[in-house]
Structure formats: C-alpha cells, structure tokens
Image (cartoon, rainbow, N blue to C red; front, side, top):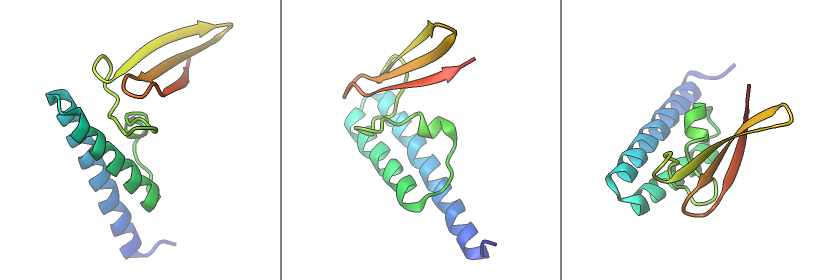
Length: 105
C-alpha cells in the first residue's frame, strides 16, 4: 500500500508534467519551437524519472527523439493508412523525422 506522502508526490509530479506539456504546446503555437522543445524534453525526463502514469495524449504528444510537442500541421504530419485489414495512424515529427505508428479500429 502506498503511503500518503508517495501519493502526494506522484500527484504533484503528474500535475507538473501536465502543466509543462500545456505550456510547451502553447509556446509552439506562438512560434517559439526551440523553447517548446526544451519544455517537452523537460516534461519527458520528469515523466521518466518519477515513473508516474501520465495521460495518453501527453505520451503521444511529445516526440521521443527531440522533445518537440507534436501538433498536427505545425510540428507533425499525421497520415492514415489501411493495409490488409490493419489500419493505423502514422505520426511524423517534422523536425527530426521520428515516426510512430498507432493502430486503430
């Protein structure tokens, strides 16, 4: 059973990660992609060091190679593919070329 303090720390870490991610997306939309990139890397490193569960939109919303917030049309290219009964979404980072495929039904 988790102690009261550890639950408090994980909750604080999760809130910080969410806040940093939202700030990174906001800065990327304003055009300051380099600062957004640093914030994205900071959020990702905080996630990895604290090992807290974060929402799926944050996991999929940060490039794992360069830390850029993935915003369709601005910092990411999103394509739908259907091949032999399997359908998937391909997300490509426009800054480093990192690609990720997610299956969907």
